Image (cartoon, rainbow, N blue to C red; front, side, top):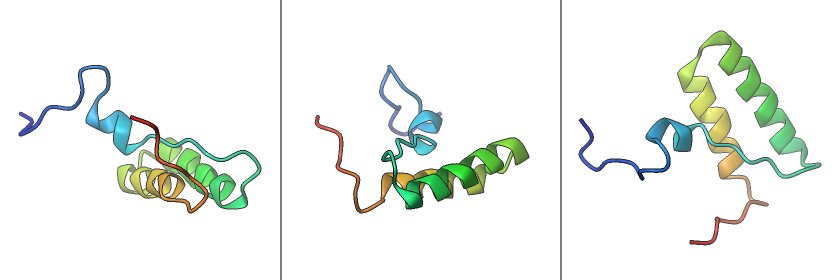
Amino acid sequence: MWAIPPASSSSLDAWLYEAKPVPGCGGCTDAMTRLEAAMKAGNATARFNASADVRSHPDHKPDAP
């Protein structure tokens, strides 16, 4: 059971693994390659880390509320 449930339109897993790469960015391309490999391997930790790298990339801007 969740202490605070995720938004009704999405799940916590969807947010943890969300990755919106910046087109043409080498860092994003590398992280997305690692994300795809982690997904194929079933490695949740590597999936999270690669997704977090894409989300925290300096060129990324937070989504508008």
